[in-house]
Length: 436
Image (cartoon, rainbow, N blue to C red; front, side, top):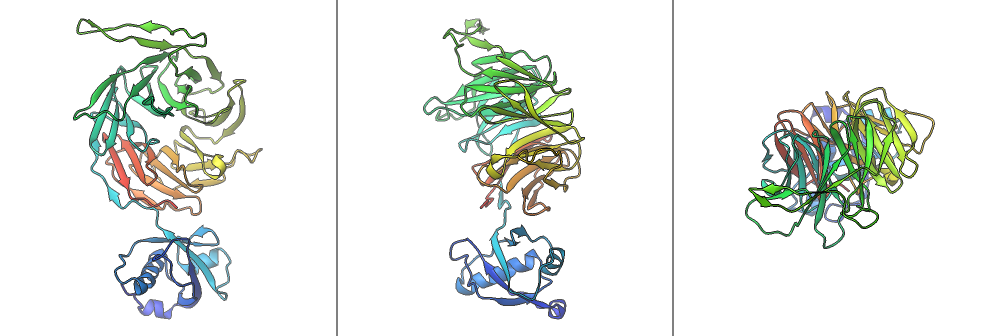
């Protein structure tokens, strides 16, 4: 694939560059300086690097690359980038290249009977989805549903895989518009040719409105929930109370026969402070819960005292929140405008975001950090798009348009896939994403 040296390129000034990379051979080119047209954009640079690789590896199949200068991704021509950053074109320019962060494959969608309103991809063995038909489902691959979690009487709004202790199967928490949370257990190793129907082993009651979000403590012994009633409740996930006795038990009959008992749990504490719906929660540290609300605030809560220790106000209804990035300390949140905002709570005294991404055209409905990268996160929006972001550039790395309606939820899966659900009743999987 030859670089097109048309008249425009020939009339462009040239700059001396050296391509460097942390990628392994055969993706590593010789670090010698070469003169290239200064009006090349990312696509032209990518073609050039592919040509250089192909010169030493004839059977090389070209692939897209991204480029960094002084740690910032290039999203304009070299000319414009150098001008914007006040970088001299007289010296040899070091350009680092990395594999482009974009999906290479889109799986066939997995259809549901109603809106796919929630999902969790934290376990590489399966995906859990929540649907407005009142069911949660477990998928081990695109189109392969292994378990159906039955019991909610209204739409499922949030799902969370609770960190399991080896050999005990998987525990999942679901939240619903029916004002309850439910806890479920299943075995991922079950070999079946059809979905297994499961009933919750524990029902958590106490909210006075729709439960909008659930998050789990890393140890797995507790979950927290946020509701339209403006409160955050904390719950135990075990089957025993502190004195070792079974909590309240309900027995039901199915088809006239006695069914196994269901436990009922009450909140162990309630965090009060938000003035509108608590829409999203994260519990990344033992002592701290993060919450986002329709009251325009992000709050950090001390779990032991029940007090909020920090408030961030942004002037917009907030719908989603996640904590990650550098040192797992950055807060990403989105809501009623097209802006994905990121705050660093380690910088006190200001509510100003350290990053803002504005490429969506409607509400930002979901955001999720990549668990192995300080820089990468995914967002979803009512505009029907899923976007991949890198903190080193203000433009999205990739725009995924797999949905025909609002996208309501998104997450990473297996480290190299993005999963999303929407008002088109589809679970979509976009895979083959290289995240360095």
